[in-house]
Length: 135
Image (cartoon, rainbow, N blue to C red; front, side, top):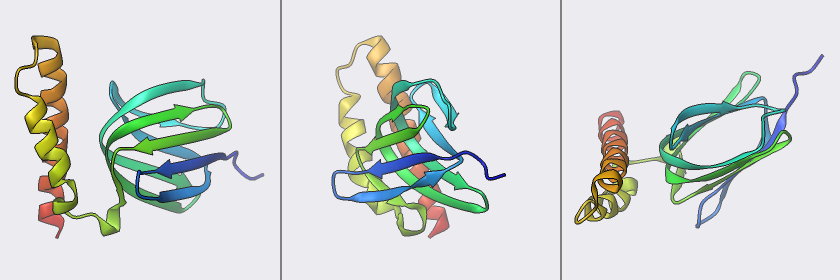
């Protein structure tokens, strides 16, 4: 018996990066990482910078995003990324402008917003450092 799948679309402003079926999708949610699978309770959530893993059997696709939104239903998931790249194509330079924008956002923020912006900045910086080491 074949495993249940869901339709997955990953879109950035530049292009559609993925449109395929998956058994599960691992996402960097704003409130923590989570896994979406067929039958998942419907949600819409913001995404933090990080990795998106789309898994269908032995096939696993890795993408990096600079944040965005996801809409999950039991049958499909739509990921709208601010910027995204397939992991094999990603470089630290690709995410540098997102890091610079996050750094500018830190200026003049109130306590709660500053904590969120600092976390987002840290996520981007960590991702860029990881990509720099992988190059």
